[in-house]
Each structure stands twice: as C-alpha cells, then as structure tokens.
Image (tube, rainbow, N blue to C red):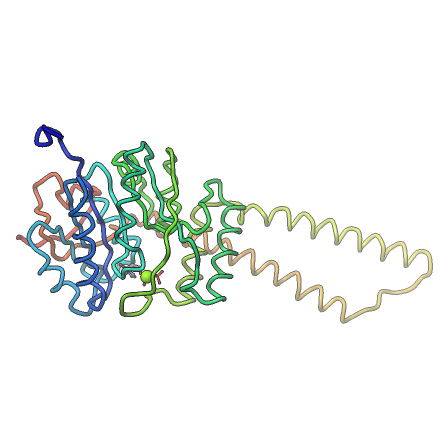
Length: 333
Ligand code: UDP
Ligand code: MG
C-alpha cells in the first residue's frame, strides 16, 4: 500500500477485567500487545482492576502510560468491570477478554477479520469444555437450555463474553441502565449481525477461578431472572391447576359419601398434600422475592462501580462524572 499513511487505521480497544491476577498478568499483557501490535489498528488497552487485593494494580501501572487503567474502590464484580471498560473505550471496535490467558489473545486477529467483513458482533465460542469438570459442563449445558427456553433473547451455546463489538453495539449497551448486569445477555440484546469464531479454552495461566459453584448458581439465576419474566407467570397456571385439582377431589369425595356413605379417611394423604401444596406456595413466594430483590436494586439507582484511581483524566470525553450521570469518586490526577 503506497499511501498507507493517509489511510486512517481503525482504533481497536481491548477491555480487560482484572481481579487478583498477578500470576497471569505479565504473560497476558506481553502476549496481548504482541498480537494486537502486529495488527493494522491503533490499539487502546484498558485494564480495569476490580478491587484486587494482590499487586495487580501495581503491575498494571508498569504497563506504560498509554495503557488506560481504572481501579475500583472495591470488588464490584466482573460485570461491573466490563461496564467500566466499555464506558471509557473509544475504539471503532471493542474487544473484551479475560486476563488469565484462558481466552487466547491471538483469537482477536480472527475476531477483527470478521468485523472487517461486516459483522457487528463477533463472539468467540468455546470449541470444547475440556478444562471444566463434568459437573460444571452439565451445569453449563442445563443453564443454556433453560435460559434459551425462557428468555426472549437467546444466547448461543458456549459463547463466552470474549467477543468483539462494533462501536454502535457498545453505544447501545451503554444505554442499558440496569444495575444487575448479566453481560452475556446484555451484550447480545442489541442484535445486529453476529458471527461466531470457535476457540480452544486454555487452562488458567495462574491463580484460580474466581467463580465458585455457588457463585455460578447465583450468576445463572441472575441471568434467568433478569432476562425473563416467565418464571413469574408460571405460578398463575400452577395455581389454576391446583384449584382445578382440588375441585375434582372434592367432587369425588362428595359423590363417594352420597353413594356409599363412607366418611373421608386418609389422614396421611391430607398431610402429604398439605406439605406439597405449601412447598409450592413457598417456592412461589421465593421466586417473587427474587424479582422483588431485583426491583429493589434497580430503584435504588446506585452507581454500578466506584473508581478510586485512574489515568483516564476527568474533563476529557470520558469524564467519570458524566459517564452515567451519577456519582463516581475520582481523585485529582
Ligand atoms: N474477574 C473480575 N472480577 C471478579 C471476578 C473475576 O474482574 O470479581 C475477572 C478475572 O480477573 C478474569 C475474568 O474476570 O480476568 C474471568 O474470571 P475467572 O477466570 O475467575 O472466571 P472463569 O474463567 O473461571 O469463568
Ligand atoms: Mg478464567
């Protein structure tokens, strides 16, 4: 290309959520900058330290002045870290990737190629789940099946939040105000043409997974309840069925009494029914509670995250205070 200088290269932002990743970070950053450095893009690296208690922040600070870094005042969760990254990303295309090298940086080249081909969202999907145990694999499969049958916005199986998004998609994602953020579905919500690039999940480069089985269970419920109201509606039908059933039983008892004069027996059956029905009721209330808790969180309208330190200067396009029109603490730089 003779006039390469005059062609404006697209900016590629890479958003990296970090929570206690000292073991993996140096290798990760070296690999990331190697891969992205060889691409025909203007790179923008954004590290979001999600309340690490190890030296991750100190490490990020050594990555150089052109690396944008944001430090949360405490652990707000990966979803909040991703949101913060998207809030400051200025790229024409934006990649989100884990810091533990489970998402191989070289896949970014392929994601980017698909973006150039016109796709607005390019997801990296796990080609296999060999790095997961059988229980986690089963849980994941059941989750996707349940989620997709209940939600109006299905998410493709095996798609992680390792993906590339067009500027327009990110702008729409940033308009979504919800506080409980199930990123997989939030990032799929805007729609647009999507492509999938398979990749092999590598084992963690160091450290341990931050997601315990219980945290994953809560995470799955979060996704379900945030993206579907069907679990709420099922109770009406369950209630109607129970009432219909009780009418039938009542009629049978009355007829039995008229025909044979037999009095009602079966104390144990009554107890079993009682326990069963109250179990269903409590479950229903519990599910209502799940939705109520979410409404509660949303109406409080608290900031999604609080920044304690960053080299993304306020007053620029990315002024923290204007990011969500909400309080965000920021020390003078
Ligand atoms: N992470 C984060 N905040 C958290 C938990 C995790 O920013 O509260 C980051 C973590 O540093 C990593 C990514 O999110 O870059 C994925 O986390 P992890 O590897 O523990 O999840 P897994 O791969 O086991 O699903
Ligand atoms: Mg991981």
